[in-house]
Amino acid sequence: MKKFAASIEKGLDAAQNARLLKAEIDSVFETLNEELSEITKGRVGLRREMFLDSPRFGSGMSPYFNREQHLGLAIVSENTPSTEIARWSEDPGGYPCKLVLPERQFYCEDRDALESVLAELLQRPEVGDVILRHLRASEHDSQSVVS
Image 1 (cartoon, rainbow, N blue to C red):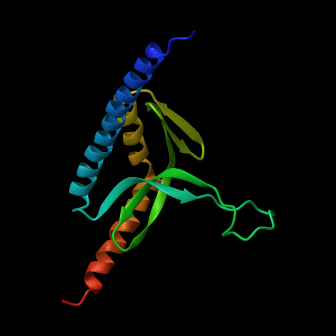
Image 2 (tube, rainbow, N blue to C red):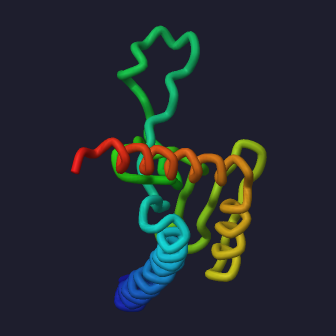
Image 3 (cartoon, helix red, strand yellow):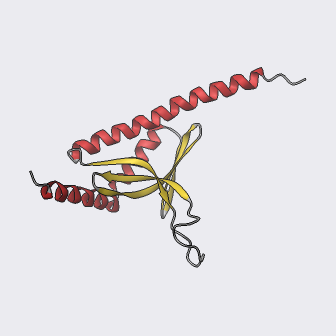
């Protein structure tokens, strides 16, 4: 008869390790957001968010039905819709994380790789443009409020 105790122990260890790695990934995003908030005076952030896929052309279905969802990285600000800047996925155990751009995919096996990939993403001109658009929108919103 098969003994399951060793398998159960391995599963418990894997779950604990996954919690630690996911907390590490969260801390990378927290640090990124602290610095982004400092630079943008708290008006812009970055978060992982669910997005709806575009309907397939010629599917004959209404664009509101049968749409798949995916996780993405989004630039966010108050009173402005989120703007997806990359697709994102995480392994159930934490790493590897995958960041997908239209022309390239990045796999991050550890904290250093994740920090490097996120830094590279934030240097892209199209991401800078998204951040600027969110900043301008938040400036416009704050100026249009009557005191």
